[in-house]
Length: 287
Image 1 (cartoon, helix red, strand yellow):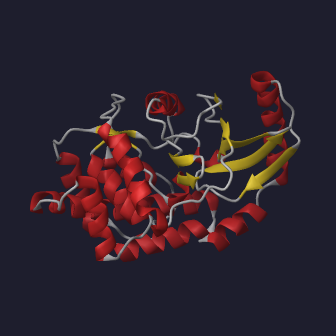
Image 2 (cartoon, helix red, strand yellow; image 1 turned 120 degrees about the horizontal axis):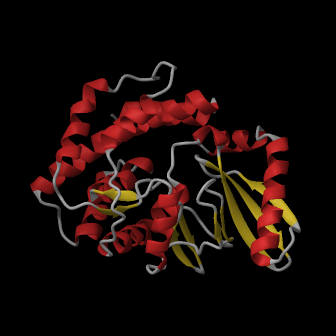
Image 3 (cartoon, one colour; image 1 turned 30 degrees about the horizontal axis):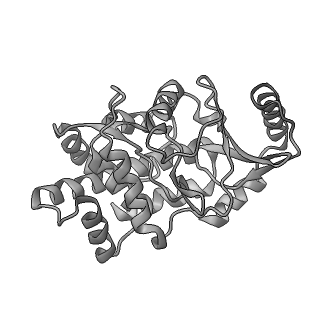
């Protein structure tokens, strides 16, 4: 996966980079009264272009949503979510946020690592902190609507997932309480550093069944080892999950593979990056 991210960074349009550097300079001048000393592309992120910014002794990361993803996200809602999670101290502070374009400026966290199995407990604790707060936005995540949104493009799907659609209807029919969930627990949205541990990037965050997040964490990081999965469940529930809970967890796992395969197919059509094809293929195989 790293190879394809690096390849994508090499192909990034230099003209667009120049425009985004100009926007960044304007934001720094207006918000922080600073000027750019260094501006470089960060080869991370599936939905955004991210840049490292240095201004004097200060370091920042600025996020620009990819143009092809226009209309996929509600940045007014993301702004609301950022305010809600601020009190939990699990997100890197937001210094600037544009609710129309989704541009976000945050401090750069040095010596930070993304998720790996070395941080399994720390990652679980971040998810627990978010869920235990029982926050709500009033906007619910509907997995069927998301599935249909990703099918709405003229290209042919890379893989057929229709044989598993019953699972989407099942998880959407569950009447358990919906709370604020992150809904995108990929490895790059975790930061572990001497400054603290953080869960970042809330574009997909809405009120959802918490089991969606648990299985998003497992499936997005392709955790197949049963002992590790059981450890995650025990860390989350502080006990073994009941048979009823296991049924729901496995249903969400299946539903997430369906959704992720469609999402990656959508992204591959719009971006053409082989990374998205690899993701779609993996999700179809797991399904």
